[in-house]
Image (cartoon, rainbow, N blue to C red; front, top):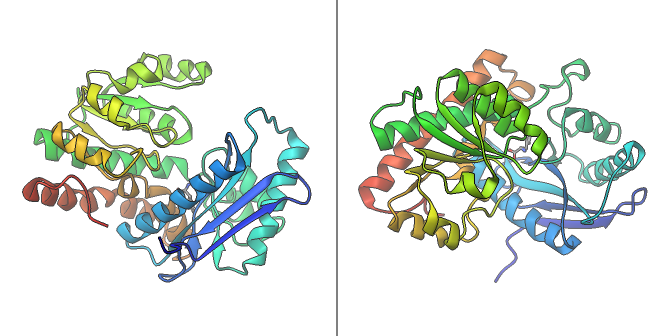
Length: 331
Ligand code: PHE
């Protein structure tokens, strides 16, 4: 197989000693963008695999959103038992900043699983190519509420396609993962009077479930619960052939990146008559908002309106897929 990525950097951080992987899928459409993920992996090579997949998904995400950017991703592969204290975190974020600085603007990062706006400010001590700095540092701040706005717009389009109405009131959703994006999706769906089943590996998230009046179950149960729409909002690869065989939802749409364990799993979903909205379209709200406000000088209201248009992007994709009987976007 030819090498698909434009550039892959794997560097042991000089301060932290931790493996920093930066995969640039392409800069052909413009500056490569993609978040910085800080997560535990069995080995750094698993982190490398994840960076390769996630950066390619960012290219698809930017293309689907009509953004003049290529895809990239940074992965800090923490050992399975790692615990980062304050200084350790600063050290590895400075290591990340140095790798980005060496690329001279070919790539800019943003928050992702395991990092937030405050972390972006730490990276920005070493490079200016960082999105989503806190507002007081001149950035557009936390991207997760905006990603959630896009997810809810996508969920409306999915409900319209499957049930003939975009109304969310009384509609049943299972949200797997109440992290930053999943938590905001839960709040927004609850405000729209949807019925929620929610799950997270972190038992502390139960407090939010109770506040929203959502049913709290284990993640394995949430995946298989009898709902209208399943919303994967945690790590990737949850849709395996075994899970697909046990699903009881009519549709799936959520912000988790790379939900399918393998592309062929989309065919299994199709055979079961379950509509799956590509996560590359559903999860683009964060990048649409941050690049709109920070690069294109859109007002927050304009950027939010653009994020909501994810529903308009998704609707014809779902319509064409239903008409042609194909399980997913080609390419
Ligand atoms: N985590 C974001 C994503 O996957 C990354 C990002 C957000 C990059 C905002 C730039 C700006 O889309």
